[in-house]
Length: 267
Image (cartoon, rainbow, N blue to C red; front, side):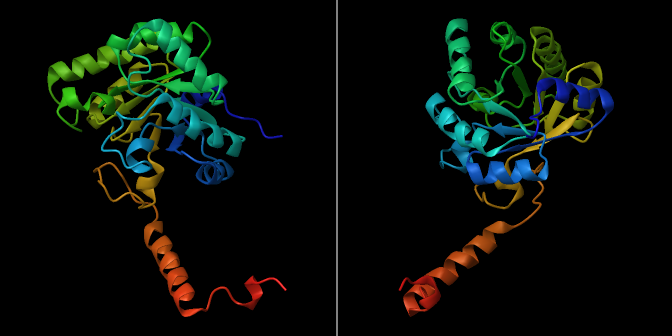
């Protein structure tokens, strides 16, 4: 039986200088493919709201939706560490509710860790969740659940005060017990400084090459999401056209009577 990665393995990767690969998944087929080719961490992101459910942003995603999408990812994987996002308003109300909801993602969904957005302002919440032995991945910089405060998806940390706050946030989440931290949408130089200072791994998304690992959304790297195309996304394959061609061929063969043929029919 294959051994699933743990948060200790991820910490060891930073110590040894091995880069950490992370992708999002929201269903069985994608998670199985990722796991089979050796992804280190699968993030069941609340980005599911945008790329899978068609929401304008991540804010409408519910805890029950996250549980639903996490279960098949866990079932499909044997080696990757599974981290699940805590959706908007599942951890901000009070510490008791945050602990309970984090527990549901572990107990009911099967995740090995949870991720939540926020830095110094959420340090107490991170500490409360880790205190009941649930690993937490933090997320600072551009935090999508804060788009209304930030005025949209804008790079954070270009101004000196912002950069200082991000450094403060990074130190705070490490001290609170986070096992890793996502750095999103910040200047590469700042991300390098954070990565050098922290003892926990940093996972970059739009944060340059010097983070300890990188995360992207699976639909973005395969060309399956045409709603937006952030600068930090690289398209590693274009399967949208392949799928479109396949569906088009199916429609044509149904219309012309080519499918189903004798080989697809029972006697």
